[in-house]
Image (spheres, rainbow, N blue to C red):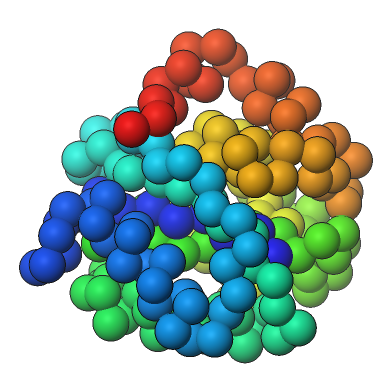
Length: 182
């Protein structure tokens, strides 16, 4: 399981980077085996102008739990760390996104394709009612791909067949370079 981590608001006990460190501990405390952790990266806020820049990372979880059980644990962690879901793509103390589980497409290929093709303006307004994997916007987001390249460069997207390394290389150079290790 590949998970993206992000934070751009300080939690009462620390900075966005400290939030990610705590999130790693919280994942373990929830019984999730963290098999690999990327470096931490400073990344421009997405969407641009929506708040302070982020600290992002990625982890690989080794678990036999199903996706919904893992997602439930991740939402509990976010809530404990002060995450409030008031605005889509809003600022947050912690964001944990389940990006992919091996070569699985959830809930099905048609639903994935629907969310993948959704116009960017609609993406701002609507969120799926169910978990869609792999993450439909994965190929567009350097703040996810750069950390993933640290821990899963050869992972193949189950729909496109493209590796993380190749998805990253397809992004414009300035977007890739805006994601800086800290």
